[in-house]
Image 1 (cartoon, one colour):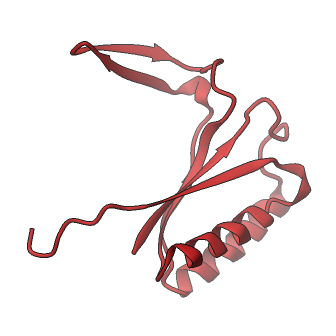
Image 2: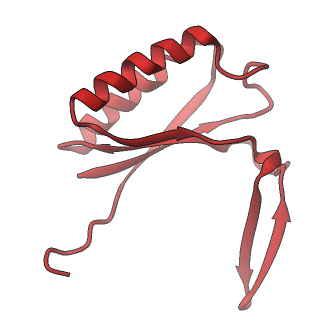
Image 3: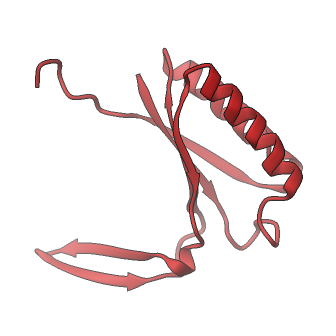
Length: 121
């Protein structure tokens, strides 16, 4: 089963300057372990919401809003697409991923199973 892990952060309370070199080193070790275990399919951090844009559709008409998105307390700061045998295993990987960040960060990982196309479709 594939799972999308969306990492939510509050940009206002995130450490200034982003992840420390130590965090990046520890994250690299975990990513290597996940890759070797065949769990990690893809991962990346996302640029700040100030550089983003939202496209919304209402009444058949799209509208575009440039970031930052002040009304949002949390934004998706990164993601990981993982392969796991169960939701419980995906949760265990997410806990390890979050613990690497230490006490400096307040982050949430939302885990959602990817809807797979039926066999033969």
